[in-house]
Length: 145
Image 1 (cartoon, rainbow, N blue to C red):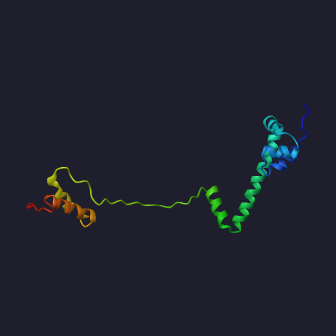
Image 2 (tube, rainbow, N blue to C red):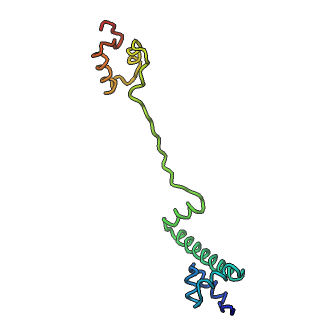
Image 3 (tube, rainbow, N blue to C red):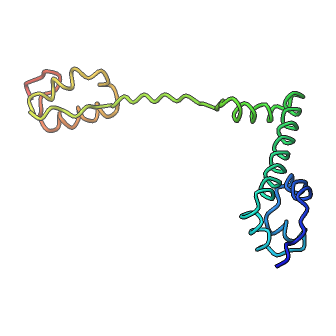
């Protein structure tokens, strides 16, 4: 079988645009299988593609650097994140203060539990106190109920 004439210099030039194998096949007028086979079996072909890809990346980096040095804020941020591992970090502190701890199991300790709570004015504590008063449980050291 006759080998398709594909210029490696042209492959390298085209690879600066990051073409697919299908696009290379269409450009050179060969089948996709031909390009796939050359890529798989031909070291010089793979090197031409890799060299073109590297030229594209170098050119892109140069343009990014030029944009950044001209003060393009978005590019400065992008390069900082990708080259310097800088990150946007928002610190969040969450402070949870429960309104009521679970009361001790023995019923006679509930009034002591309520007395030591610093949040007795909170709606939950007031409502709990009312419920305990209705149940005739001593509150605030009042043993008369």
